[in-house]
Length: 236
Image 1 (cartoon, rainbow, N blue to C red):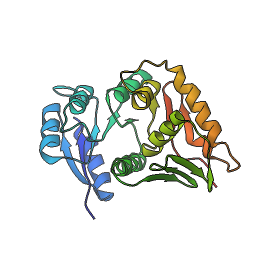
Image 2 (spheres, one colour):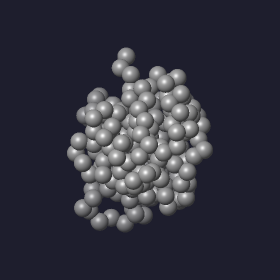
Image 3 (spheres, rainbow, N blue to C red):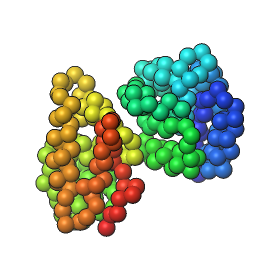
Image 4 (tube, one colour):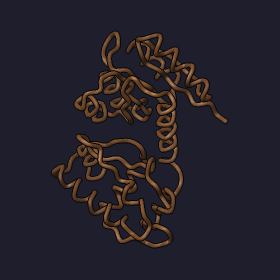
């Protein structure tokens, strides 16, 4: 089995040491960087599978590095989790809008961090393979453009289908309404943010069948937007 490589970018050596121990115990290879310049060079030359990125760093901010990574073709597909003490809602929204794949605030539980890393890595790999997405009894057939729940084909509009496909390919990550508009409608299309809420309601209604729990997969993230997750949802 290929060992997955994680780059930890944090100027506090104690944080890096703690993360290295947790990551190596979980069978990851751990690289470290304490500043922006070193982090960028390691990303370019070592090609990590995922980056854990602090906000406040010598030589700049993690947001500045993230913005650069997402602009450059060679690095824009590298998954990035912001791991920072900046817990204000505006900081979370900014990090996700710039392109972070997830946002975790300090202090954090290493086990939860590793679980979220693995979920992110799974969906990153899944985006390039397979013709269906599946969670429990819910199946999205990408080729036939059908949604099936417990063997029954669901009636669903094209926008709801796109939303569900996007959510299932990117589970356990919170998306703002702006991000969902960009992903589903496109960056050059003007649509009001409340349109997202309308289609989310339609998607939830389509998932409300005789099989309990599945409409709860689409979760509201207060002050931000929505996420798709089966954690804490009792599926049958």
